Image 1 (spheres, rainbow, N blue to C red):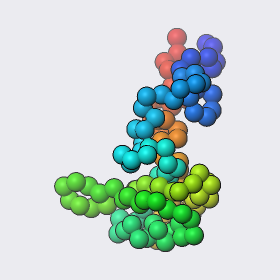
Image 2 (cartoon, rainbow, N blue to C red):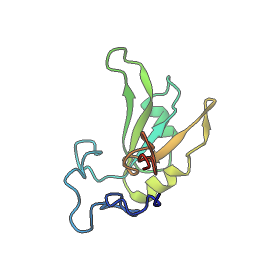
Image 3 (tube, rainbow, N blue to C red):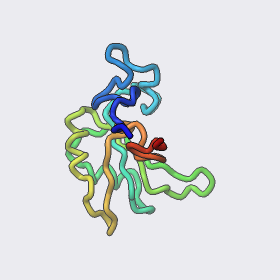
Image 4 (spheres, helix red, strand yellow):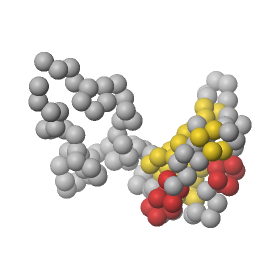
Length: 131
């Protein structure tokens, strides 16, 4: 078999996986409706009782524009993750340093929202059937 390198559609690090130049038409897909290009962090493995104020305290000192904790539509229960939108990319980079920090006995997951495309979905790297 050949090494799964030249697959064609996997970009080589950084934006514009489908060739440089114009951004893909779905570039605003991860935005919060307004703007779309603001640096946003995905915060996972939250305690279920966490509220927006808790996330603001977690990232205190950083310029936060918006905090959203995702809730189940039917029960209103927190799903244990949310998004924090920052005023600058520098603030986002500082926020990412909290990845793996323990909070209320849980290991927090802080990642750049939408940065990785698919987060280790089915198959993952080199997951194509060999032949």
